[in-house]
Image (cartoon, rainbow, N blue to C red; front, side, top):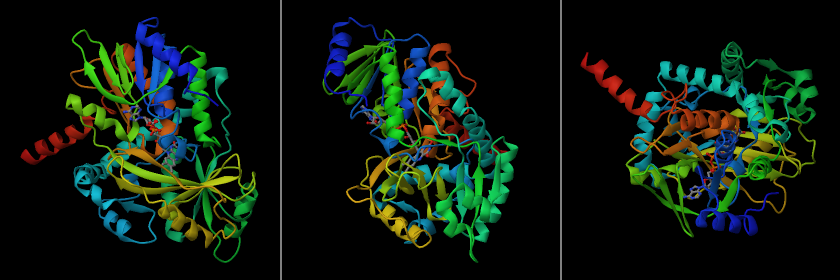
Length: 447
Ligand SMILES: Cc1cc2nc3c(=O)[nH]c(=O)nc-3n(C[C@H](O)[C@H](O)[C@H](O)COP(=O)(O)OP(=O)(O)OC[C@H]3O[C@@H](n4cnc5c(N)ncnc54)[C@H](O)[C@@H]3O)c2cc1C
C-alpha cells in the first residue's frame, strides 16, 4: 500500500519548492480520475505532481463497487423528471434528496429534465457505450505490464418483477446493438453462474437476470487506485498531501497553486476534484452543472467466494460485489450539494429489503457504512475541458456512476487536450453543451 505521508511527501515539497524539479503539470485530486490523468500526462513525457487533501482514493473512489462496465445508459433512461418526487418521498426508495440542498439542486434539475428528451438520452447512450467499450483497452495502454489484476467474468443484474424483465429485454437489445452483448439468463444457468443466488433463481417467484459477459471488476477499488498511484510514483511522479485553497493564473501562462502548506507553480493544472470541482473553478467564473449523488457501501458478513462476480438488484438500488473479505453491498442515490451530510441509514434500510429475498446477508460486525459523493452531471456524461480564458487550467469531473469504468478513457481524452490542444470529444464533453441546449431551444422557439 502506498504511503503518501512522511518522507516521499516531504521530498516532493522540498524538490518542487526549491525548484530542483521543474513541474510540467499538477493534478489536483488523487481519486481514480486524477491518478489516471496523472499517469496519462506522465506517459506524454511530462513531469507531474499529484496533490490531494486526504490520500489516494479516499474520496468517492473508495466507495466504488468496482465494476468496469462494457456499456452504460444515462440516468435519464431510468428516471424521468416526474419520477423524482415519488422516488424522493417513498420510504423504501433507493433515491433520496437532501432537502437543505434544494435551492442549489433546482437549476441542475432543469438541465436534467432537458437531458431526458429522447434524442439527448439516445445521444448519451451512444456516447457512453463508445467510451465504455474502450475502457479495458485504455487501462492496458496506460499501465502495460503494471496493470493490477482485473477480473473479467461478467456482471449479473437480477430482475425482481416482470416489469423489470420487459424493460431489461428492451435495453439488452440496445446494449447488444452497441457492442455490449447482454442476454437474459434464468433458473439453472443463473444458479450455475452464482450458486448463492439459487433462492432467487428457482421456485414459483423465480427471477431472471441480465448477464453482461463483457463486464469486468476489481475486488478492492481503493487498493486498485493505490496500485496505480504506486506505478505513477515508480515512473517518477510526485505525490503530496495538501489541500488546494485556490489557483491564480499568471500572465506568463503559469498557474500558482495555493495550498494549505505550500505554493507551487506549474505550466498546466488539472482539476480532478470530483464533486468539489466548482469550489476551485469559482475564482475563474467557471461553473459546471454538478451535484453530489452520494452512495454508500458496507462489508457483508459472508465468506470469500460467496459470489464470484458483481450481482445487482436494480429495483432495490444496490449491488453486491466480491471483496477481499467476502462481499460488499453498495448503492443508493442520495442527491445534494457537495459536502452535504449523508444518511448511512439509507443503505441499512436497503439491506433490510435485500434480506427479504436473500436472508443470509447481514453487515459484518465492526464495519461501518462508508459514503462517497458521485460527481453527477445532468446528462450522465463527464466534463473534460480546458477552462475558458485560462489555457493552462483543465478539468476532468462528472463521472457519476462510471468513474472507474471511464477513468482511463478520460485520461487519454484529457492528455489529448493538454498536449495537442483538442480531442475528438472536445465538443461533446465540454460543459458548454449545457449552454448550447438553452440556445438551441431559444432558436427553435423563435422559429
Ligand atoms: C456506491 C458507489 C458505487 C460505485 N460503483 C461504481 C462502479 O462499480 N463502477 C464505476 O465505474 N464507478 C462506480 N462509482 C462511481 C465512481 O466511484 C466515481 O465516479 C469516481 O470515484 C469519481 O472519481 P473522482 O476521481 O472524480 O472523484 P473522487 O474519488 O471523489 O476524487 C476526488 C479527489 O479530489 C480530492 N480533492 C477535492 N478537493 C480538493 C482540494 N481542494 N485539494 C486537494 N484535493 C482535493 C478529494 O480528496 C478526492 O480524493 C460508484 C460510486 C459510488 C458512490
